Image (tube, rainbow, N blue to C red; front, top):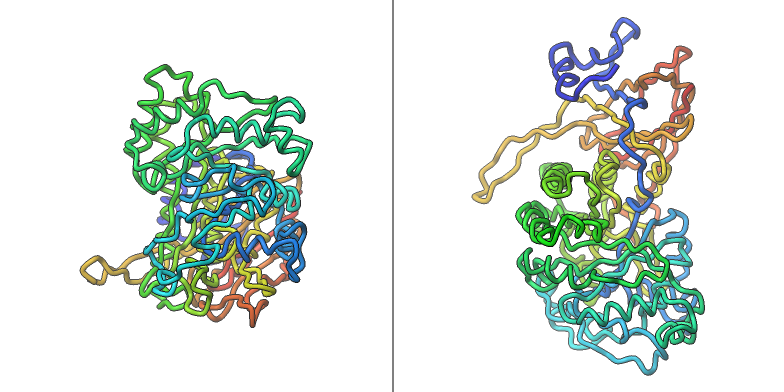
Length: 553
């Protein structure tokens, strides 16, 4: 039986949490929450690129995070930290975006190839930044985080991708280099060996075989650090950068520099200007990059927050849902067939730098349980919109912002965010299906700009589901700090015969993994009982991310 969301929720409001699609008389008792998984209502295939990552020459991301050097005592493969290679490969990343970020539109790719002792040093884009930085960082006057030594470049990045099973996604410098430089980078990466000077140089430097880079970002945040363009100006630059590109037999997937959060005007005006030369211009564009950080709360310290601030940040993270819907609608005004997909290639929480990390490690902090729930909220959102979102990349891979790893010298740890990515892996390549959640809301207090207290409600359980053969994967976030959610789970058109659970949670909402306690916050497996009649009632732990694996007939 297929019903609309409004009708579904309306029935629930009238008849109580137990009166949903399946008649209440079928069950001996009612749970306070319900989940209906409608496997006959597919949304779309979940692109593995929803589980992608991002590397920028920022703070400790590259130097000491990824790159330790070939002569380092730290275990490495060609200079790349081995612990990172091993952990990242386990979660089968989609793509890795590089070299930025804002750094990309200052970067000359030729600086990072050839003999390392011949590579130039440059001032890093982030050298003088003051946004959310420590005074100690501002006072630094040396080091690779401020003065880029170019020891890690295109060839090393491609090696990282090969070693971890990821595909490369390169961002072209649109602000400070001409189209010719982009064409030469494309040639260096993708031209067959021996046919051009640049492809021969690639063979000498690293690989006779072409890199076959498919994904290319045409600039980054062109509304801001990537050129401070008007959308009409950027549309003209985009046309120049994408006109008559050589493909070398590779199907190029070009990504446009999309909006800052909810800036619908940027999207509408770009698409309008781009198609002044005809709707065929849309064929150049594979994806439209949306960036949204939910920010931080209170003092901005990653592991210092009240329960109200916990809920406030989770609710701000949930704004991603409407951003996707709103930009998709605006894109459809021009791209009526929705050929172009959304690429959310920067997302996550963004706190201040932890006081106990080196000053040069800009925006580095240990992710907490709250950050893990933000990861779950976003991944579930992308999966609910698998027909719209083709790629997503949290910022960033290691040692900054919403990272999945932290490293300092020989120390290395998987953050809480890493474990959420591991839990959600079975969704990749499966078919997302419509799933309805009904649960009591949680109430908390928000504060406006004048510090006036505003009573607010937030959903009490939400998530997504996918199907692959006879296996249904359900992931869900319970944001309630202290309330478990006893939930009846039904699958329309099928019967559940067995189930297993994997849960990330803690009685301490500030829990996190650190170098001293690397296993403080890790998922646990739980047994799940399914009744002989196929009834499943599961209690979602407070403050949790959960994966249920359901076998059906």
